[in-house]
Image (cartoon, rainbow, N blue to C red; front, side, top):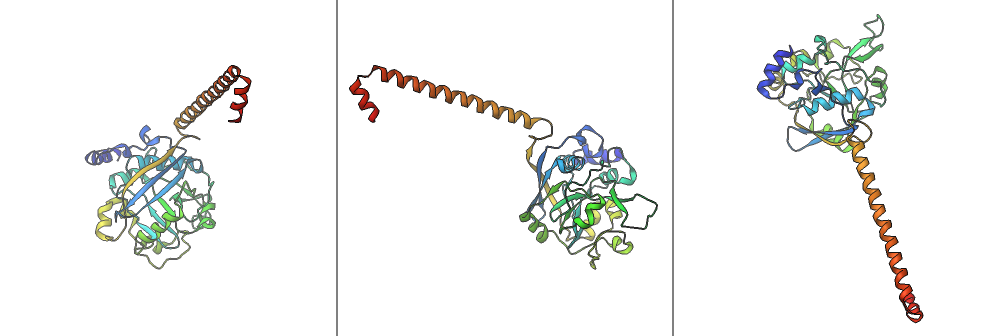
Length: 302
């Protein structure tokens, strides 16, 4: 499966995404960073601001996906007003197969992070399969998020009461101004996934009557070709750009080095200022000693 991915991606460029267990895909993210997503209208974008300490494993996965171009031409395939916007399935079926949790490819499934932040409006979390902690597989109230790989969702409203207790750990946030872009310029007409509406089993509290969304199974198998043909109005990203990287409180140590340089510059500057101040006082004292009493009185009046 990974070999099929490598062959396909060799034609497209980067093959790092095909091996999620590789060092390239397991880089430690900066303590803080942002990813800017350009929408397909080429006029609007929104930014996800990430705090690694909120959910380290998920932040690392998001960083490595973005670094390696995973989100290029990603469709927002599940947009449910009053609930969430979901994306994160590759347009390339060969890549999707690697991150399909049912295939259990080494490194594809992310280690679970505890919930440290809430799923308020604008918070971004990884979507997940529901796992049951007991034998009652039919009780949706007794589930937790598990087997997270690449699918993400943006909370359109405060979903903390529904999602926090189920283990969906936010790793980033979209600010208020950019959420207006998400609300207005990401197409919402297809609504919930049709299969979810048919079989239930979701925590979606809106009970959306708009159920024209794609088949997630076909999305994994056919990729963007399936979406382009059957859902032509579906919004998508055209690029992702990582910005505002900061490693002062974590990451690979670049921040600590930068901080040390700043401290050294400050100390040197302080020494130069002190030496200059002492020198000027000495010079003034020498001048005062050379002046006559009358001249000294005149000098002091100046």
